[in-house]
Image (cartoon, rainbow, N blue to C red):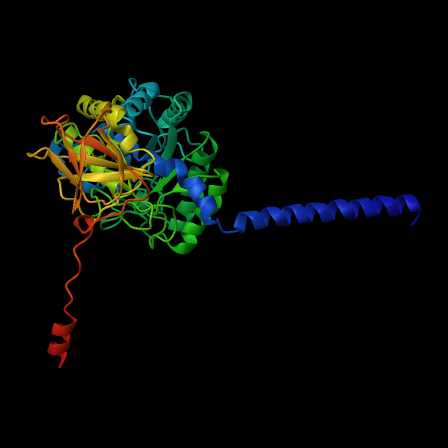
Length: 467
Ligand code: FHN
């Protein structure tokens, strides 16, 4: 071998070694577990956000909860399973699905005006119908309906324009259209649904999740649901896709053991004492259904919705409040009205929600809730005390007290053995929730009045019984 050849070989070996080292380092970076600091940084926007919009929208908005003249008593998006509608019959609904009034900018603006900080929309629900232009199957809104538009692309563009975070819901296991997809509550009812679940996951669900994570810009949150048959091995295939969206936040419903994901998902309920030590997001309907039902007028009042938000924030959670657009793509007016009213309250009182942490107290001596940030307690008063006195169970030195709606007018504060008493104005400023701010020195020093009642010590009694 002459000197020139030797030099070329040496350079080649050097280049290959360098390439191998870089690949190794990259692999190591991918498998290195996230540190607490890294996780906190990734979760920061989400924890600060507190309030998001859930959108359940699909071809089920066409029947709108009615089948063969009967009004379904169950949630609208389950109509296909509830009435065991054959696959071809249900698929025919796509011909009538032409949501010409869908206006992504308007929807994002509704969410913005409501004080919501992120949106999560159904990319595919259990009926298997993709609400985006999927290349994986023609059973999607672009190919199978007269609409010929991609709502997810439009929503992604609108979110980008209006600086709104966007996430997708995807029913990974249940799919009542494609062969091999799972069906809860008794399983398949049409032989077109029969097939191999692994094949379904490999050929439909995984490629579609790849599409939504690749084609719509930044995806803030991914929301899996009803993990029927989702073993650890099956879930693992999805995990590989997440690196397509560094920083993505995933819910805990990918696998049936709920072993993966970033946050818990209490549904239609607010846990009594939050979920200490965990991130969580309560998803709830605004009426009684997720997917649009023409006859469901059971709308919660703005008061209930706002007090839910406050309750959730006081327990350290997020509120993902659902809306169900109709078959024209429009969010029903009673839902928009309520969101608008929530936004008006948040415009004044948002400081007491966004970026705050859970209450300093296990209990409060008034009807209401508390959130906090360093140096400030936000007391959400649901029922104005008749004597105009608000006892806050802290012993700290107080710097200032005022209503968040009137920050320049200081309220008098008196010391009390049980804490600090704030002198309130006589008339109730806000019938839903008035926020009183108490600025204090250092972390809240909670008096007994704000602590959980001590557990009764019954060891002696137990001992006697056991004798
Ligand atoms: O079956 C679904 C239901 O339709 C809806 O999507 C809710 C939202 O959290 N999740 C499931 C039930 O847990």
